[in-house]
Image: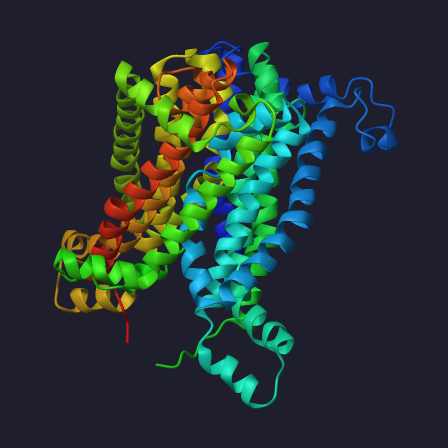
Length: 272
Length: 275
């Protein structure tokens, strides 16, 4: 670790340490009631209250009701994984198909704009009407957000691939399939990856909100129920976990992925 | 959202030419797609049982809007939501922009605040709503708190990065000519941060819009979000869909005709393209 990096970490730790100290001092001197700002130790202890009757690792992985904390986390993460596995290929496939035809792309672009404008939280009431309160509703909200963002970005990416490349492959006798796999998808990859990153950002927020309003498990649901029971320490715990999960996903996976894709596949040269 | 149209110049064109261009550039396709989607929607709603609960036809959605307009509820709700968005994000921007600039001025200070801003930016305002509801109950303060919070961190973060990424050359040039520190801030750093202020403002108002809708739903304050949430609870699905369509259209109008022009004009005026 070089000096500049170490300095950055040290400097960056100052505000966190200050906030933590103030938080602990508040608990010691009691400036604000614990129901408004719970002491740090109570937030830490909430993990064990929630994990009260957890038998072990297997029990936690099975999301048994004894392990509330891990169950809620795994439930939320499971839906994110499922929506990526389902929504991503669908979004890319439809985006490539639509982007190949200029007229179709022009026609579908406003649809994408509109769908993205109402994606997320605004669908929750209608999803509750269709699927009832529960797992399916929250999955639908997440899928809806992921699909439209990936679709829209893929569409824009494919449409933005310069014609020259396509014509080049065609001239060399490339078939339609090869044009797709060799030109469109690689050319659109930076845009697709940006779409994935955006969809995870918006999707994670939308999932938490959807779980609060129309869910029956997951981190958002935990936040909402704990708030209704005035268990502020559980709410704080939930908020911290949500932030840490998002930061880990974004910093450790999505940002490097995006940077690598743009370096590897980004079309720097553009024909004028 | 995509940023492809950023570099498009906006010359003052007479309306008829613009309409003709719109028609040539996919206007026909847009009309066709809208018609096809409406037809599909109408067909589905005719064939399913209990369409008034699951998917009311486009006609009944329009009729329900007439009903709400007649009672004066709809303008009231739209006005309330927009009022919250405008006031909340103005407060957020008014706090966030100076904060970002001030923190960005000094390298040590900006390195100190960068991680903590990043951390709070990744706590979405919606996740914070339960805490605010414990603090302030379902009052107007809660919704405003969420909007201001959602607005503040993205803008402060973007402005900070914008100030820091101003090329050193400009500062050195002014310094060589003997400019004071204040002069450098006024003539280099603030104009240099203008593009990122505009981009950050658009981004954070986008987040604030979602936060306003969610806040209204959860805190039960009158507005568009509350309208679709309460309409669902009394089985008025037509009103739910009406609200969703309005939310979509309002955001597109706001983004297309207010935020994006401001952003592209700012970038044209102050954008630093180093060659």
